Length: 631
Image (cartoon, rainbow, N blue to C red; front, side, top):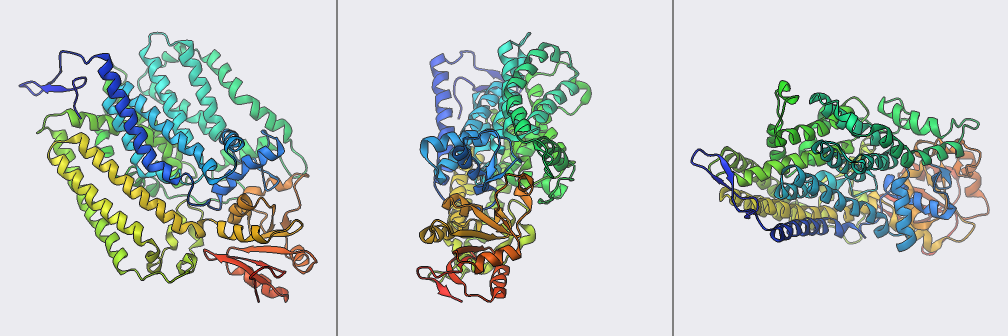
């Protein structure tokens, strides 16, 4: 899209010069409004369908959604609890916000997901503002479009982790820091705002909320040999502002959770064990895996898809001659260098630590802005310029990939066996539990027989890839850069909706809502609910039923440390105590995530009754219930 406010003409020597008459302010305002509405439109099309469905997943999704429930029940906003057990792994801000949403809108899937959905929009708008500040409105729009339609941010807002909030705080921090660079003497408001936003980042994600801004700002000032700028940033008063916001909760949490018995207290677990030791791969218990370094870096091409080619090309904007970094770089070069330092610091930081696939997420806004600036330059370049030719080659490569993906999806949709009536999706999967510590580990469970459950998502995927990549290539060939970019973004709207449908199909495996509903229908006060194993395997059961769960041989992982405090409820069972429960006078519901639990029931030599089965998981009771089958 070219308008009078930013259009450039080529001189006979191929140099660009701006049009002489600037656009009126009302025209600029209308363009800004159109860009913002476009960002909101794509956000709405992509994120709103996932607000109320699919059901909550087990593990961190429902576990994190349960924290604000118990905050409101206990009226305790300092010490977090899950299943009545102290939970000290996470910073509180995401759960404070979610508790506020619950108190207004009630507890539901919609209420749980509203927070991250809104922060996704805020991040896109912050990226737009940063891109506009660095390279103009069109670059800002492209930056938000890239981030909003890339795979990574969408995938990692499908369950409740606060990393998109970290993206927002970091983007705002870098925006504010850039503004300080542009002012001869940064104002108190700018400097203190950096302190406030950094404190909110710390209250969102812990120490990395401080490490990342320091690393990015310090790294940029180091490579540009501009340390004197720190003297302008009012470090003393900014630090006081930071501590005023960040410190109170940490102090209160330390005082209310002192060392007692075997528990070493909040300070040791939260700071030493869960953050420093986790970074050094020394954390206990060791309930996580480490993504290989090459895969961690290589997945950048996946998380930035379909803009991967443009992201790689945009790196060419970064000045590579180190001797120039400390000299008077022009504004585009300084901006590119700052964005490169931002992304590089996060990627290098996690290259030396434990890492999951999604740890790269806070680097994506930097790459999106860098890509948006490149797309804006390409759109304004001459029809026969190197930038245009490069973009066409990228579109051709993407077309080839799109045709391959479309053919594969169409083939699976055509040849996959039909799904029998009332078939259980979990029964056609292979359980590769060794991969479950990875965030996308359940993808390894898929089998050819399972693909029949995804027929409509596969058809949408085939159509989306084919139409989107063909249209994108045609428009690139014609030099219609804005329309080509919008075509690619619209393709992702279709593909993300296919992902949304697929998550609905996967939901009985990823979560346990059908089993929770069956328990609710039969539960009476005084009944006991037991999960075979650790709490995270059945966290959605607690979220949906509100019934405190007992765990059979589940004294591991997230609730391990909280179990050491004297006020821990008696919810951890061993084989002997479970046998007494099952053979006792009260009714027990036993949630079984795998076949091993059935063996346990058979070894007791007492009747057991099936309550419900879904997603390869089941619930049994020691007493008959409506429609229960005896074994």
